Amino acid sequence: MIEFEGIGHRYGEHAVLDDVTLRLTEQRVAFVGANGSGKSTLARMINGLVHPTGGRVLVDGVDPARQGRAVRNRVGFVFTNPDSQIVMPTAGEDVAFSLRKKGLSRAERERRASGMLARYGLAGYEEHPAHQLSGGQKQLLALCSMLVLEPDVLVCDEPTTLLDLRNKRRFVELLEQLPQQIVLVTHDLDLLGNFDRVVVLDEGRVAADDLPEPALEHYRKLIS
Image (cartoon, rainbow, N blue to C red; front, top):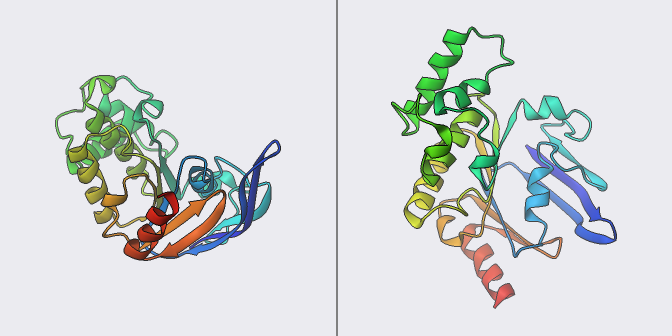
């Protein structure tokens, strides 16, 4: 369970979030809102990338601002641009790199990396230069590098922004099949029909919180 208790956040004099209180227990939750609404800032608080300036966040009772490492062991994060997450020359090395602190042998890291790539459509790409993959393949690689750690929660901050429509749909369909709790920040409203819950943020506050259809109807009226 992810809890936001009276969350506030400011950049200087600018309030990005103001008294946000949510309890997320559903399997698939999406945050939507206009640019500057605070949705990405809120999502980044789940694993301690951003700390609130007021209130607190709890992930199964653990505060990311105080015990960031413990929370990050359980919460994976996928960014908008996969190039910002790819750190090794080849796809196989990049996934294996995520396992470097697990105390595994090199052979075991490589075996797990290969299995993860195969599971998510990148079989045979172990030796392929990571930065020469297509945009959709890079985002799959970034996802594999998180999933190989077997997190309980996966936070994805606008992961479909740089993808074409086909790869956007493929990526979200993949998210829907994962066993992890998913928190997705997105502008792609037409991809959220199968989500359990949509939270609409507007100027740092929760403007709607409901099933996809009524929540997105409210959002469309908000921006019309």
